[in-house]
Image 1 (spheres, rainbow, N blue to C red):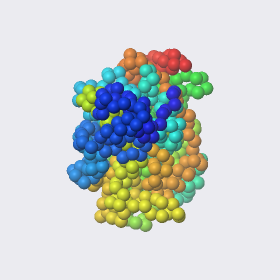
Image 2 (tube, one colour):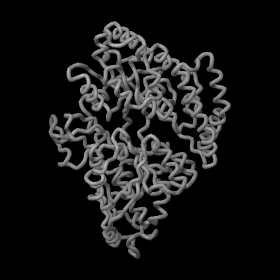
Image 3 (cartoon, rainbow, N blue to C red):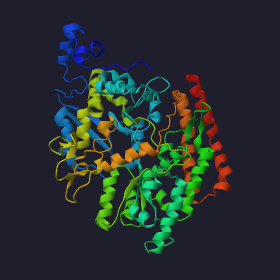
Length: 575
């Protein structure tokens, strides 16, 4: 990959201005060299440069998609007082929002793109592969030269190899990803360690080297203790997880993603966009399907043991997240998935029902399987697609201007701070913590999205104004992405470093449009089949030993071998 050029300022970027003039830039007829280049830059009604605030001299409107989460739904104050108002005040850009429910966001975006009705800016996209062939989205790598914050970050943290993993067969990428300085594991599990302790287990010692099998055995003893104390009945489940059912999209969501990574398998959320659980064998130098591997059989055997032995509620795979939360907050269950943004909400939920001092909860490094790998390996995360409609409607010069806004919104430090924390002095300020300047919410505010709890009558800046929402802040340096971490979360990451490892990122096979279309045709029914069988195995509707061969045969009948063969053919042709 060619070294990514860094753009420091427009006046100094002769090539950049030449490109603007050549494509009908807003200052026509200006020379691209010498003093005239500086004059041309001054004539633009927006600015280039790393950490240079974007502002359009003339009002402009860009349409944008929005993934609206039910647990912090968008309200009018986001537009009249909050995040969208502040963005417009700073940039003179009005965002015309098309909101979709988060549960079917991808489907609605797909329909909009296919029908030609897509918004200009499409954030919160985890995989762009399905959108490339139709031509409805732009190869954004053609325009990163106009994105100084993006290019500066990519150069500083050597993101080239990471960006290579999302390039398509034409050598271009079609999603502007969130870029992290280092990979960070977000999702894990929370336990009622007061009950673990009463049952004779020190969770802090267990997590140092425990496995999913060990957790199973511990939970059996903990449940036995709970039954003996009248805390539950033998027929009750003590684990009813969230992010597995409705938000797990029929795949087991977060739990099977975590467990799958522990067994070198793509499962749960991780199987999405994988063409059928396809992973890379570094020893053999080729791709294979993890979904019909021996490791997969180990995964479903262990997961099934939790259900079979009355520990994990099978309703986890169908229920809403609200139901899972209520069971944990009420004390009916003692273990549940959580993440950085959810931790404070979970603790507040327990305290509201059980009362302060009547419980103790602990966020633990989740168990290992056949490896100690974290589920997160890539430094890239979800990102932004740009629709063809934007280029068609705005023209080249107007499109480049919009890309400059996108660069500011998603990759500049100032915008990151705004969309995450709100305006300095209004919702937060700096405080001195052991000689270090740290961001802290002002009195009277809290934020579930930042994992910062508060009093019941404190204003949640995410609920009221839309700050710290999932659509706009991801990536950035470790210092920025962890600036809201509580000491407890910082401690969790320190434990991750001691007890877990980071797996090597798989290479990317880059199909042509025709090859991608063929892989998609095979992969969609194949993944549906894998997910259905996975949940049937785990919940005991299918017998892992008796029905295993039938499962493998069903995958082969749905072309899993052809997917593997074509993926390897594509990969080898690129070498």
